[in-house]
Length: 386
Image 1 (cartoon, rainbow, N blue to C red):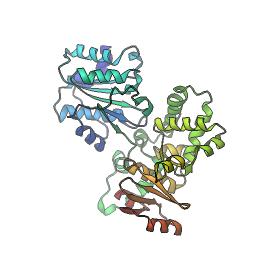
Image 2: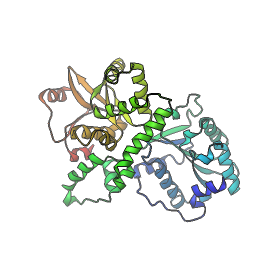
Image 3: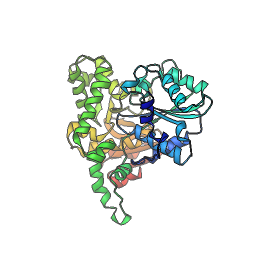
Image 4: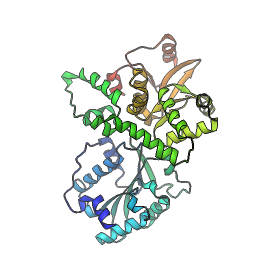
């Protein structure tokens, strides 16, 4: 095991610097929770950049916070060679290698922590009995659920999203001067087509996105939940991508796929738990939210475009707006047969109109609905101001 530990932690033996692109918003969030004892979980879609953010933050701990490199331990828990070891055994081996007592503070980075069945209890024991700051990642929301409440009051979660437009330009190494502000529009068109999966943005390898979709569906849904008819799950995902941004009911989905409503609900839940989709409920009282149709958005428009082709720019634009305001817990507004795209929990009413305008009924509802702030977002300039 010692060789695995050293390969996973090159900073123990040599100068270490992060040679990727920094995602400043997540580094800032990690910095803000560094001093408190909470266990920090990084969640999000597979390959969205969680591991890179961890490695980047490790470099900051070494160079900006002057943490002794041997006090920082990173390990990916889904390594095959570690299958027969518990997290505790792995950490004890690390402490043994560097002759570190349990009272000496360490910084522990556990990638794909949900690969270990009893990780909640092990992390609780670390939290209660040892001197360490723990960062962990997972690509499955369902596996992070703590049914025994081992970590209640001991954790906080940071969801890592695909690249936003600013990060997309950064990864493309595009710097636009104020005098050339008109260039934002053409690059935004590229962003609408590419989406924000970091490796795809850097390589442009279309097969990478298709393989990512196939792997998530095959491993995290079909295999994990022992689904016999895998094709219906694949068809379900295609259906959701075709109808992203539109109102959907479970009954309608079940009828199209010729499966039961219960199966439809389960599969839909699986897609949400693996961060392939997000759903938005109707604005209103709780019973309205539960009974009404949902609106579906892709977690990344690049993944959507692989399935549907690059078309319906209005729907793609709306999807990108949702991803940008997701942390404001938006709902959709639907009154007397008229729909407006988003009303956020802090009272911002938004209608997405990519290079177009509201129709008369939408304009009437938009004008009369009481909200703290109202915006019609119809281009990259408005989008960047959100």
